[in-house]
Amino acid sequence: MNESATHTESVGPKIAVQKVSISQFFVDELVHQEGKQELTLSINQKSSFDGDTNIAKIYLSFTYSYKETEVKVSEITVMNAFIIEELKSYLYKNDSSKIILPRPTLVILVSIALSHTRALFSHSIAGTLFAEEMPLVIFDPVAVANVIFPEIKPTIRKTRKIKENKQ
Image (cartoon, rainbow, N blue to C red; front, side, top):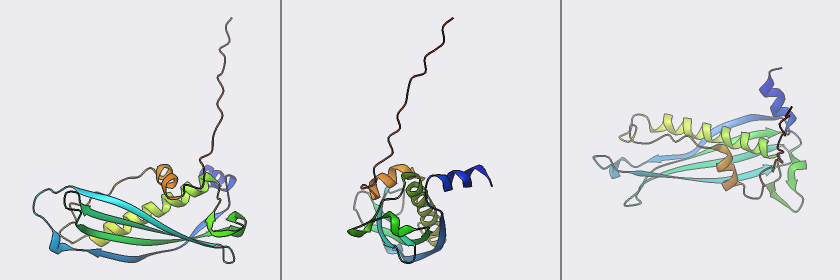
């Protein structure tokens, strides 16, 4: 077994991608403006967790708008379904819409969902007037996980100073 697979399994439950699909996509070529107009990107997410089937779904949306006018140019929502071993044990007892996964596992899920959404957006936008203008931003999955799952606190690592041996 390679080192990364061993590491992933040691920090949380076993996970697998069950399904990835585009829930919705649109591009409005009628609002295309000649010249370089600055675009902004916003990310939204919605999640659902089913402890009986061990399925966690993360829906990520990318929305591009013109910065100055805030006119929406394009949007995609991608459903990322994951199988998470013993998911029920990671759900809040009185609120199954929230999850308490180990931080490294959560970051892995967010990273995979971001990559899938970016790839499907790139594929969907190809051949449109915006194909060359849409930046495919690389995200820090830890930072995105902190924003979209604020209830899961980052792991605090204690550090210690190593004393030099003076002879």
